[in-house]
Image 1 (tube, rainbow, N blue to C red):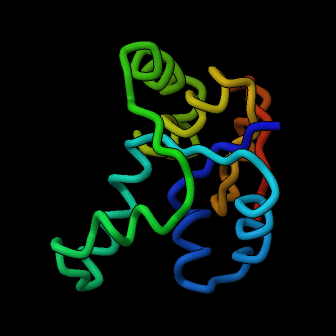
Image 2: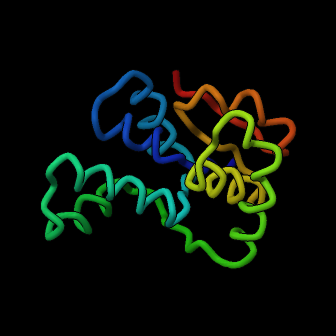
Length: 130
């Protein structure tokens, strides 16, 4: 089974938040990937919290999750998910994760409870970490 990590799940791991044990277990035992959009989102949050840009690449590599480039196929699917997710306020990053999960027939992993409301409509399995 392939697990597609949302930024919220990986940030929970990095910050020791509730659900970090679930994410850590998946990364240790399963194949885990993330959209480059979500990796950029994590990097942005880390810079906002004071991480020096010079240390950003090394910190992101330590996640031990393969970054998948955001290509035209993902972009198209991400945009099409707007209609089914707009009512719960999912962001571009959220939809990028869902699109990648749909394309690889994997499970999206998130801390965002709103995803439960759109998982079926988006055609994606979602694992809530908390």
